[in-house]
Length: 466
Image (cartoon, rainbow, N blue to C red):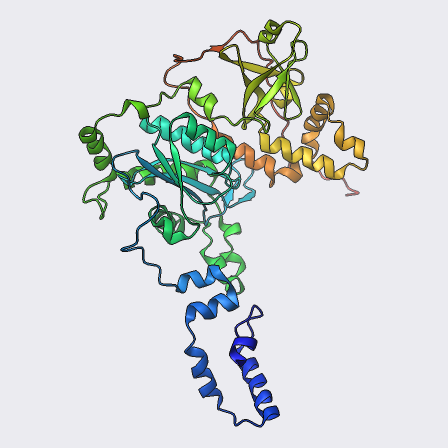
């Protein structure tokens, strides 16, 4: 009873504390006591998983539970019946500190989003971003998956992450005739992809400079062992290293297959046939489909003013075809460039350009835009200042970014600049459109001016009164 009340609780007191209370209770009740050695033997007889769960929580106790999946019937398909039948996807934060390619400033730890074919154990797509898991990382990974394989999977095995339950992901999967299988949020339930994450960490990340193994014992870590001080890898170089590792993994023999994942993948296509229903052309239609819609999905198109998406106004001459009436149109936007959006007008996708200050908004990411807006809202004293968001005022905030660039070097601005090299996709392999076409009669783009940069002349003389 004393152990349950005074030892197995969230305070995690030492065993001597519970023993002292035990002696006090025995003395008060007139009951003979036992030695601390005997008391300690009783505490050791408690199930380890139960003890850790009471003192440290469920996540810590999970390591002490008997967690073998052998002989268990999973409610989802682990491997599928053929290549690209079931694809497992998940995220993990890599244990390595990265620096900026521009000035060497520390930018933190990146996130890896992986798409793993269950039948062949082949990694078919991945993305590496600083941003936490979201539809942006899913968009990049899915594009790379279709670009590499030419197929869209019949089913995704996902966990309970909110990005997998979003309207964007569910709509994209439904449009391609796929489905999702939700697994429990425990690592052993996703042993396939979780084991692969372990291989990436042990075989790649833990062998690079700037890995965070030393931070597991922070009190024993000296300054020269701090990974933030020894980090030299950039996001682009890490992306290239992971790409080469995945290629090496795909061409090496897998113990569970008896052959390489690449060979298993190609053999499945040869034996099971090429399923035309699952083939997807990596063209303009597909890239637009992978772009997320705004929160409302459809927006009102005004034949005189155009459309408004995320506080910005966009225009295309095709809106004049509505005459004098307003109509709702489906919209997609590129989260890595808010200078334009796509609108579905009269059976075709058109590229709409931001109406004013294009040179300011072009090349800016959605996350960078939202961060600056949120910073302005919090710093605004009046309520009306946070409500009346006009394009002119937003452009002025962006134009002043060079004044606060020093403060943003280790923030979202620097991270977005590093992510662009990993996020920008190659031109689609085919520009032919099957069901819809893109109109290219949009007005010519205004050339984007280079962003201001800081250069310090260290050879300049120092004033005497400095």
